[in-house]
Image 1: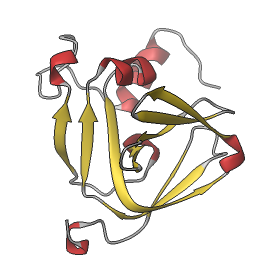
Image 2: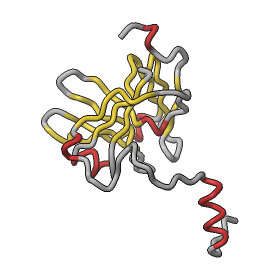
Image 3: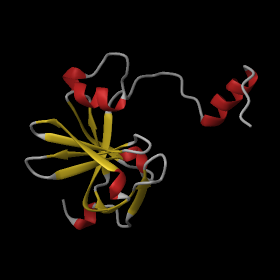
Length: 148
């Protein structure tokens, strides 16, 4: 992949509490999807990660690393529990959880792996109801929940 095939500007991300911030340089313009059982247990469903040639991590004192297999480790924020990255140990390559970043519009999916382990209850292209955040909040308010 050439530099012309990268996201031109650095992209910034953070964990839920903001204690760990990550800046990616030369990020790949696609998201990797993994459906393996370990990723499902780690994040509750599929893993969506973005790769970059350079990463700057601040708040490293909050980063905990867990060796999840002979060939991989996973990192998370020890304060809020947010998952941060997956590192493939044989190469040292990391992919970072895509949801942490303010990503540009129009990114595609590079590939989906371990599709044989994907549960049948989700499909990225299935026709299912799609609701906005505003619609969900309105439904909750109509059910009597307060957000004050």
